[in-house]
Image (cartoon, rainbow, N blue to C red; front, side, top):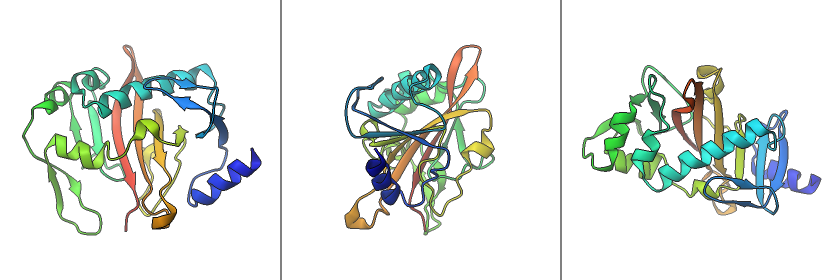
Length: 217
């Protein structure tokens, strides 16, 4: 176990490892984690096997499956009824700048040809003007996050040059980060993550933010 943790610490050179617990598990299906087999690392402030963490992961995989399948109706069912869902293309959350959408608008993403300015391109400064479909392809599900080898439960797996402020902006929320460490070929700067942020409501846990992270200049 110590050798495995050391190898991941080397790969995730910038990860926030303080207080994290590493648990190796075998397999992930569309919704639930099977705690019986290899090569998924879970980082959490406490055991991933607590009922609360298992339930959070279950919900996160449900949302991730809807995103992966571009099932916007299913995704809309998870969105917070009052707050809607916030989208940010990079790690830093700016609530007054980032786009928010209601569940009803997200449900229409499947056929929407409307374009929105989702932010600015890192290192270039040009506006990210895209349809929802194009944005999801580039800044939401731009990797097979359902098969991500590293998962953070209320723990930021990796930081880069962009401010990681999810805990500051959403202090009472829970989040799951799905992370790819990147490749040796590209000196690991091709890492990327997707965070799903949830808030508790009278109707249960609801999605309030989808945060995409990657190496930035």
